Image (cartoon, rainbow, N blue to C red; front, side, top):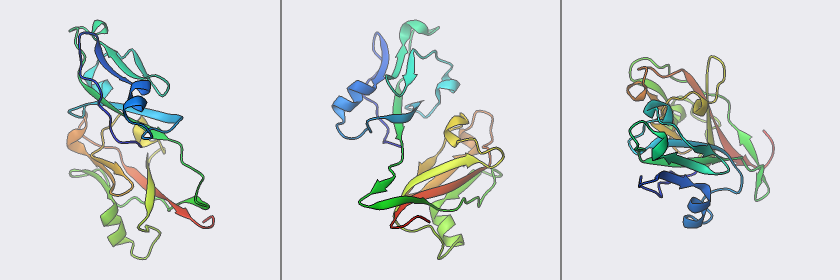
Length: 188
């Protein structure tokens, strides 16, 4: 995933986080062909939670919320990020994946698949220092985390994955498992 971008503040028209404008203002920070887009309000609420009608929300245009489409004639302020397909090779190295890890259940405060805890619980395993991707799916049916509509406190290759129950509109996270991608010299 790219970093979060917030180039526009809601104006008379609405909130426009268009891909063309974001690329112009952030050269080299968004891949040529994004595979997914995620938008949340600056306070972290998903589009589904706001209930706002979105005019454009795709990997070709970006994100556009028009004031005229809203009941109260006002869009919230959103930020967006894009996911990019995984490069097969980097400097002659192939992308390899760790095994799937599921160290926690969504009881208590949430589902904590935090990298530091995973490394402590799996010393000498395949969680090397140079992790470049993280993937999270539900344990039950392998739904990609980003397609569940839940909000995530942490979702990065350097920290792992954390879903907090308190951030969910229904009060509980799904049970997730994670794996990490890294560059290796031969296929694993």
